[in-house]
Image (cartoon, rainbow, N blue to C red; front, side, top):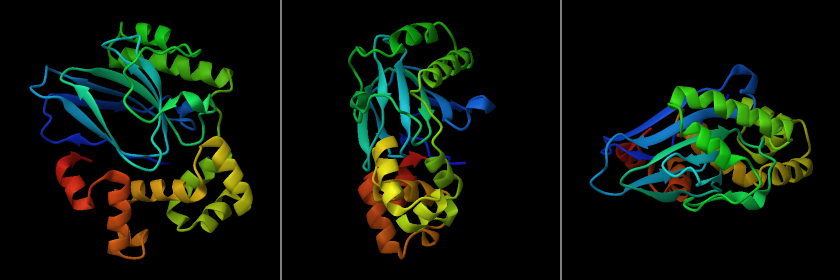
Length: 246
């Protein structure tokens, strides 16, 4: 199954802790993981998270200020998020294509204002703040089930097939064949359910794959790989791996 890398955490950030847990088995077709990112002590300088596109949608909760929450996702390029010297976030990382909520609510930048939408994010955040990370996971599972019951999280057979067969995909035509639909149907389906064109989704998924297999299995040559990697992550592959925990 698709297993994107975590966002870039500088190797020198020794007092920043990132934890991740897999969801219950019955939610594994829609949830990639539950995660927590927090400081263990106040930092001397502001911490910047180097967020990398992965086509996932995150339900984000600020546990230092439970009024702040939101739905976040990146498109096809990185974002640097200044989280300050002390922070505590938890979230639900949904697999590509399963979030069917209001696309206008999705933020692609730092979320720092109180949530004012109709989702029960603030009420959930207040409950989450009463528990440690292990206790939070049961509450996040309840929220995902609420999303499912409200048809806001829905299994997506097209993206499921694509993610299950990533090793067989080199082109958009391959993607359509794996999804068992025409190229035109693929275009309509992905735009509606993910917001991505097939070409843009392929670019993001290919970069994610490159962290786990040799780039020549995915790209025509090294220069093409480095150019694509830099456009999406902001770094060359060597500099990214040297700077961030991967």
